[in-house]
Image (cartoon, rainbow, N blue to C red; front, side, top):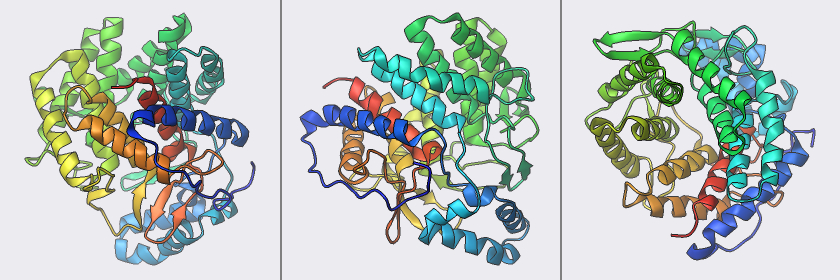
Length: 416
């Protein structure tokens, strides 16, 4: 499929599967989605398509400089993205995204781990793509976006390594190593750890508390960036015997713990910019805390996870355990649900299923609603539920690949 056709798929009419067959249904949907992906290919549209175009970049930069003056400049792009998402084909083409490749590789390794080794062969092209997609200016393995990203602190050029993308590459090769014992995978993983330790700056907030930046060139204090770097350094430092990496991980998570508010939530950033609380980044922080806790076994981390998940359940899920995009929005929003929130909610619930009494039911509710309402008849997923209508443009980086992996993981845990 080479054209942008968000309306091409219609929602498949299928009854809700009984609870006892949810995992089998999730497996079938994951397999059907990957069949769609193989036909569609690995080049993808993206939520940032309009903002990656030079006109969109200038409009967004103007908005960040002065919201009132910039609003008329960004408004046409927001309208097009909302009411005519297929119009993004006029401002560029599809691109390949390392984050998507990493998640497809992880999902396929999960299916292979469940007993069908043929899935491992299908993961290999995604791992090979990650090798090719590494940031060309860096000595170590790391990954970023294939477009210039305009942020509130400036523009990061295409190929700038991001600490929020790079750990997924590490986990993809880690999943492959667990199945193959490949020394090449192991070498790449250690290289990723060296990058995270040496190239991502960290600002000392107080003794033993360090806030990680997003890239090698910025000095922001973003909570989820610190959580990603902390998990990666803890995992790689422990595996490869680098005690200094583990110490740096502790300092990163000390910042995450310090940034948690009394109600259990985290603002996106602690530098005066982007002071919002949303579903997606809350899940990012929590899942990295959970994975870090499994390495270090720290009671303070466990307590932060418990309080954070309680906040998530109370403020970022509705009465039916379905995701709410924002608890504190940065601006007016035009969507009511996002498939990416489903994927990360499922991932988080699976991580916490033995620690939180509600996690299993939350995973089942998210998967059940996803299978009923978010799967199109060709195998891809609806991207967003808007205030009016749906966006069905498939964004591989922003939800399709993550949802595939989440369903593969959900299917693999077995009944009970």
